[in-house]
Image (cartoon, rainbow, N blue to C red; front, side):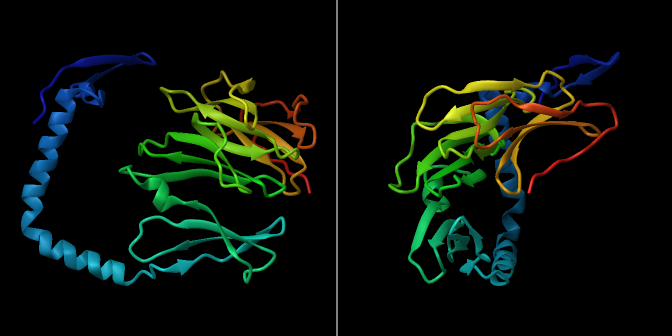
Length: 268
């Protein structure tokens, strides 16, 4: 059993006592040693079931079509889809121009990107309106902590962007400006909304949400003409908008937030 170190935290007038708060220190040698010990204990207890585990895994895997293709979706003259290959853990994201009989273009091979990492998850994945650029984010921590990058789909080269702790991402109509959100390092609440020109090293802060009940998100209308900046709470919303063709402009408020009032908007 881990040792007990009592720690008190006061929240809303209540005192909470946590004897194991010290286990939050993920980089502490003592915490890592305890986790290694627990893993070793689990493996020793489960050792007699290894043959059964292998049988169950084989049965479950046998019910999965490992080499498979998603239903293609058409956008901007391309057919976008993902495919999986037997024995590989992650999908390959692709497109074909004009028809599914055209040559395949691999946009992201998540198996290749996962090499050298114990974990990989894809977050944002959005192509510019002209089809030339891909903005995408990856988490290699397992903590939903995504890093945003931009890929030139004409050459396969990556742009300079490596923006950490990002959330939602949308493209403006100029095909060179992206809007994205970032999260607070402690609370993981998406609280900032940024404007960024591909290839630059700096981003412009457009909006910061100070109310801890709200998260911010970037969105785009169905017809791709409007960029949305939304603040979302459990039972309340506030949305601002900007024409995608005017990415340097100011966002306009639609309806101010009020308790218990949720709404949504679109343009088509």
